[in-house]
Image 1 (cartoon, rainbow, N blue to C red):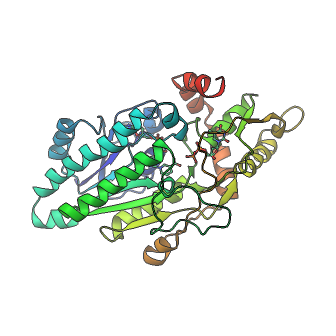
Image 2: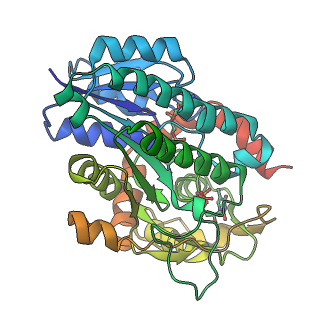
Image 3: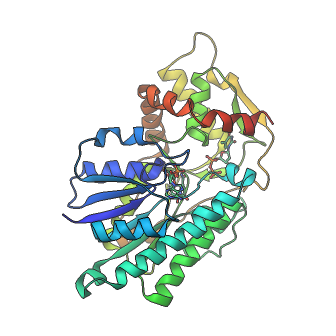
Length: 354
Ligand code: NAD
Ligand code: TYD
């Protein structure tokens, strides 16, 4: 049985990727390597219980010995690397963990992969791939009239999170150029969809709206993000893994530039339709709060290379993807409650009551 090794497969995008992959009856089984930080949630993978194509290992990507054992035991034909500290606001409060996992962890994983790959036979060596999942935030911030980020845009990260991701991208690139490791890198825009941890904008707004709480918008709400439905992102990763050119980077975006205010208004309107309040609109709960320090103004992705070379484009519009997402949250409140009873509470107190 062939395997791929996925890191961070209990987090938001990684878990969607694992569920989609195994749901499609692809040939490979998955070894899912996740430390289970506050963002890792095995409840998301509950439907895989008893599925012998999914092996879960609670492992830190910084633990070289544990990684070596996994490579020897499962001999994966590819690694898809999602594991990271991923929340910008947390990186502002405490950057150390971001340096540790995103930089040192990625380095440790690359070293383990290099040793494993170097010991493979010719055919397996040639077919092996290391796909690194990164972010558009490495490119910095755009002005309102600037062209979107392309694969050749210069790196200019502004937060400890994006700086740590930029460093990991550079390490991955260097392992290709120096050691010939067959790497692929994807830089994607803001994802949304099922199983999104409710500290990020879209699930936080849905949870707060339903809970009768305020809907916090940083600054003037005019910062722009380019929203990508997580299922579309997973499809893009499958394409790049299967047919991407080794050593190349691919931008993945949804062609959905929206201000935060637009996003929150659309969410309120969907909730007004699908779960109306006794009186008034969810929009009445909107509150403007102090801005994030160094808040990037605009992110936007030019995803034409991926469409031109591999034929990928997003299937969901912002409207269809957001409707699906709101419906998912309405139908999966136990998942949300489960998350919110944990460390999430402490985080919300630190971020919004300060
Ligand atoms: P997430 O925070 O939801 O999940 C991260 C997962 O990694 C968690 O399951 C966590 O337990 C695990 N993890 C953290 N540290 C680890 C370690 N040291 N060892 C092993 N596992 C560890 O993140 P996400 O939103 O699913 O993002 C996945 C990847 O995609 C990240 O690399 C992120 O930078 C990138 N990305 C995310 C977005 C987005 O909108 N969410 C956008 C662009 C890029
Ligand atoms: P977020 O989901 O944290 O993603 P990122 O910072 O990686 O883009 O935030 C998306 C946008 O929403 C960003 O401009 C910050 C803003 N935001 C708010 O206005 N209020 C909030 O409570 C949160 C979490 C984010």
